[in-house]
Structures are given as C-alpha cells and as structure tokens.
Length: 433
Ligand code: ZN
Image (cartoon, rainbow, N blue to C red; front, side, top):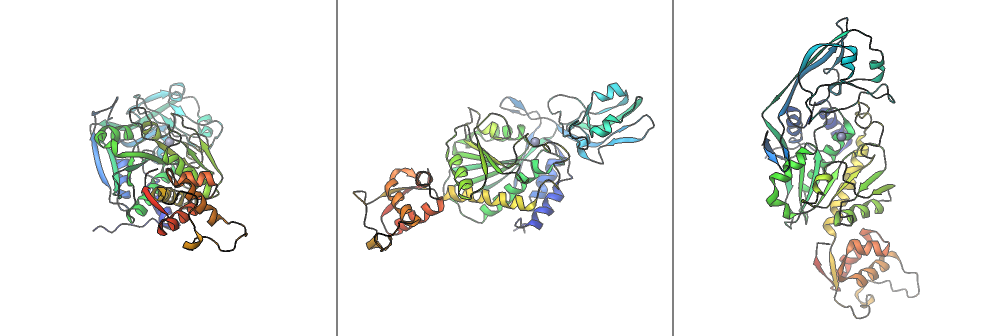
C-alpha cells in the first residue's frame, strides 16, 4: 500500500501550498495533471481523462492548452513582460502569436488594474481564441511609443480534460459531493486553499466510516464540473447534497452561500456549525453565479449544493490578481477552515430523527438517573436538551431542527439524545433529516 503524506499541521500545509503555487494550471493540460499527481501523494485519487471534442451536455470538452513560453520585447529588444517570471503575465489559454505590434495595437491585448498599480491581474480567454498579456499598471503606464515584438509559444492539441476523485464509502449509499476547482495558475486563496482543505477533509474521512458516503472531486471550473456531471448521470440519483469549499485561506470571516433549495440539509448543517462555533459569519442566499455550485444547483441536476468560503467570490481586492499569493493566505486559517469542514460532516453524520417511546406526558427521567434530583433548582442546559429532545422526538424533527428550536447547540442536543436512546426512552428512526 502506498505511503500517503499527512496534511495535519501548518508545516504540511505550507509545504503543499508552496509546491502547488508555481504551477501554470488551466482548464486542461499538464498543469492540472501535475497538480493532481502531487495531490495523489496525499490521497489515493482515481483520475479520469475525458477526450477533447466530447460533447458534455451543452458544452464540448476543449482541446489541451500547451504553454512553452511567452514574452513581449520593447522597441530596444528588452524582454519587458515574461511568462517565465510570473505565469499570470500571459492571459490563460492564449492562442499562439508572433509578430511586431505598435504600442496602440499591443495595448488592445494588455490587461492591468489601475486601482492597484503593482498587481498583475489574472485573465483567461477560454472560449474565445485570442492572446493577451497581463502586467502591473505601473509598467503599462511607462510603455513608450514604438514597435514591440510579441511571442506567444502556445499550442492547442487534442488530448483530454483531467478529473480526479476520492470516494469514501459510508454506511449508506446516499452521497455528499464535494467539489474543488483546480484550474487556476499562481493564485493562492483561489484556488489552492480549497484544494488543500478538500484534500485534508478527504484524509480525515478516509480514516472514518461515516454514515453518508462522500465523493471529493478535483477538476477544472465550469467545464470540469459539467463534464463530471455529464459522465456520471446514472450515478446522480445517489447524490443528495453537495458542498463547494473555496477561498478558505484568507483572514476574512466565514460566509456560506445557501443552495438553490435554501433549507436543504447541507444548508442547515453548515449554518448550525458556524453558529455553534460562535464565529462571525455571513449567510448568503443562493444566486446562480460563482463556482461549481452553479452546475450542481442547475434545474436538471438539482443537487442542493452550498458554498463555504471566507472572503467573498470576486469581492476582495486581491481576487484574481498576483496579490492573491502565498502571503495572502495562512496555514492557520486553512487549518481552521478544515476543522469547520470536519464539523460539518460530523454534524451531518450524527443528525438523526428519533421517536419518543413514552410520549404520553413526560417520561420519568429521575428514576433513570437522567435528571438532577434537586427539585426546585434551576434547570440547566442538559435537562433542557433532554426535554426538547423528548418533545420533538415525534419522528418529524431531526436533531438539527431540535437545536434550532431549543437554541441549544447541536452537541448538547446530540448528547441528550444519545443518553435518552441508551436509556431506552427514544428510538432512532433514521439518520436522514
Ligand atoms: Zn477564480
């Protein structure tokens, strides 16, 4: 059996982030493969390749993008923009080009961020054949009139789109899908933090036998999740919910974007965990924009899928720029995000519905040693949790609903429920909420 690397502490996380950061990923090609090969040192991944040109729902799997080099030389022949210095300098998925251009012509292919003149933006041209460069606004403003030489040594070739998955067989066939995109080049929060969280979560799950089964997928954004869904249509009926963990390495407060359903089990579990941990957090309603939750929540797929992040998609200044680098994320923040993800699966796995076997009046808890014997003293959380569980153990409410109604934590409700089950006062109906 393969010896897998651990991903448990700050040093493990930093090491993985530093290895993944320099790789020039895109929606297809060697960058993604190299990334998945590195992740395979941590998880026994199953990797599949979907051939270029294959129809996947309304889309077609694109050709592979090969990038060897790209630069711009100024009128004096000096290389002033160089892909080898930073892979964000080249618009991702750029078509090949070589020629002389006036400054005016060149400028139409340049991208910069005037508000942040020292940052290089991240731009892509996946579905329109074009080439372009990205540079700091400071550098762009200093360009002089003259003739510039452009060289973009890229190639499109028939190949395949790579997807990887890790499956954890639970006691039930009912599956939770977790998707992490892996198509961004040298950007850290988006998307290395998500890749690392999902890898660590998969490692944790691999050591347990959870109730639900979990399928953790690593693939490119949009076309990757669409390809996976198209290739696995017969299997989708087993998937009851999904989660997209992304942007989890920065110092922002947690935020959760609800599924299209809005009150699905995944929504209730994530909201409960964030609440119980006492974290400042923001809950957002679903909108059909963002990451892979767009595809999983589409009407024909309809797998309720939420998104857990810290800073919001597209709403922090460093987003999609060279400032989203290794300094912008911290391993401690990623570790905290991993524990939140662990708590979510732990809540989902312990959430059950119960039936009170003594529903006529309250059962006598004192004779079963479950109730404080000091009559008249203030009732504590433990007693209140038991009373709530007994009252709501009607087969309709799950433990999450009991926690919501009682304003107690999930753990308090769970402990009381288990004590009542051990005492034979309630019976477990199912683990599905
Ligand atoms: Zn992005």
